[in-house]
Structure formats: C-alpha cells, structure tokens
Length: 359
Image (cartoon, rainbow, N blue to C red; front, side):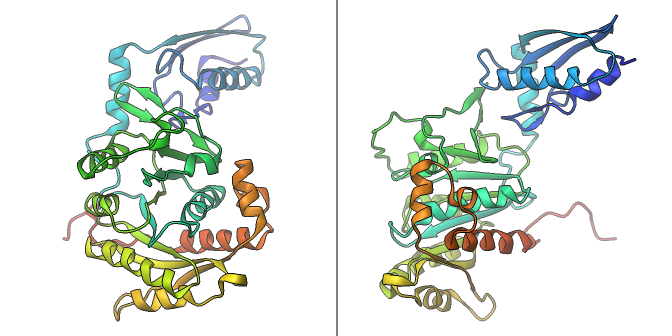
C-alpha cells in the first residue's frame, strides 16, 4: 500500500517550471496524508494567480495517480503567506548579491558585435537553445535595450515575468530562461534611456532575476561600445566574449573595437563567429578579426562560420529557432557545432575563490 512518504517521494519529482526546482524543496507541499485509498495533498503556490498553477496541479495529479493503491486525490491549492514567501526568496538568493561573480560556477558568455545587422541576436538565441538542448541549464539576458529582439526570436513576445516579492522569475523558452526589457515596456514603445538608468537595469537583471542554478548565462549585447557594454564590463569583469562579424573587411574592422573594449574591462575574448559567410558577402572577415584580436598569450580562434540560409529567417518568423526547426540546415549545423565547442571548454579558475586553503 502507498503511504504518505511514498506520496511525498512522488511529489519530489514535480518541478516548478519557473523556479525549476522540485516543489518539495520549495516548501510548496504543506501536508500529505493517505487514508482508505485517498491521498490528501495541500499545496501552497508562491503567489495568487501563479501562471504555473495549472502545470503544477496537472503534474501533481499525474504523479499521485501513478502510485499503486491510490484511488483518488483530494488536492487543496492555496498560496504562501508573506512570511513563507520571504523565507523562500531569502533561501533561493542566499547571501550573495550577484550569482554571477568571480566565485560563481556559472559560465558567463557575452555576445557582441561592432555594428547592427550582422545577425548577433539570431546567433545568440539559437546558441542558447542549442546549449539547452545538450542538457545544460541556460539563461539569456537580452541586454540590447534599444533594439531588443530576443523575445520575438524565441517566441515569448508578450510574455510577462512572474513577480514573487522583489524577485523576478523569467519566462522559459525552449528550455532557456529569458529576460528582456521588451517584457516590461508596451508593444511599439521606444526606449530612450541614458547611462545611469541603463546601468541600474543591467544590475537588476543580474541580481533581481532568479535564473536558478545555471551552467551558462548568455548576454546579447547591443552593437558597439556604448554604455551597456561598459556597464556589463564593470558588473561582469570575468565574463568571456564572443564577437560576431560578417565577412566584409569593414565589418571586421568595426567589430574589433567591441572586442577591445571588452578586454579593457578585464573580460576575455574567446572567439569570433563569422556570420553570413560565403555567397554575396564573401569570406575572410572572421579570420581578419581573429588575427586583430589575438595576442601572444591569448590567441583568438574563429569558432564558427555560419552561412546565410532561408530557414534561419523563417525560423525567426515562426518563433522556432532553426537549431530546433531545421537542425540539418547548414546554418543550424554551424551553430550546433559552436554549442558543442563551447560546451567542451572548461570554465577557467582565474579569479575564482576555491573552497579550500593551502595546507
């Protein structure tokens, strides 16, 4: 016969889709009892109108229904008290003001370019999805405040983050936790902010947004070397940088500046991506840029050459990334190869606090 402990064990396999942790770990299961084949479960959701409520309730019913000897589930769904919610937020956040500092286990990769129109956001979105498809826990910050496009590419345009106290839970798209200023402004609104406000916004994205325990955090930077790039260099000096360019020499020359600014803030340029390679755009810009950014102690390779293809554009229009919708496409194959290369790279220990002291 199934007892209360067996029901709790089944509920431990139910995950909150926004926080991405078992509901038992989040103290959402208040009480469990079993009597005469009836399982009684009391749940406490984080907030009133929780957007994940239907999903959690369905998963709880499925988990309990699969247990032998349970004929019926009596499920009562309530909401956490303010004290319970505050305790949960404090436990999730821990004592760190930022989860992405030099002692973090999360690898941070900023994707930048010298100018707009080189396909940087499409590369970043597809790369994030490709990494998540490999089983990695991935977050994505759309830091292109003035030209945000990540929500549209990933199909979460109009999706609103969930507010739990002063903690923000980002929407999940294709396994990637995504945050963008486009989720906080009305459709068609132009963002015209200056440096201090841009800096505070980036800081909030890194501190108030709960991404969970990530393997990788990708940032889609605005093109160029403006306020956002400088702020993120200050906030994330240990981040790694991918520079995206098109094959034309002029584009590579401009892209060099974004890599140099990143390096000035302490960030490390780990590679170049040549997008729209071949065809009418020619080739060679990626090699030129990699040579410009390489130093004697830090060579910069071309990590991917991504050809221009129709499925990428169609995937953006259908809100299905090409790496999922048409993985056999040459462009998708190039991005999947880039994801494999990045996933195989170990995170460096430079600047990190190790959990032991020398004897």
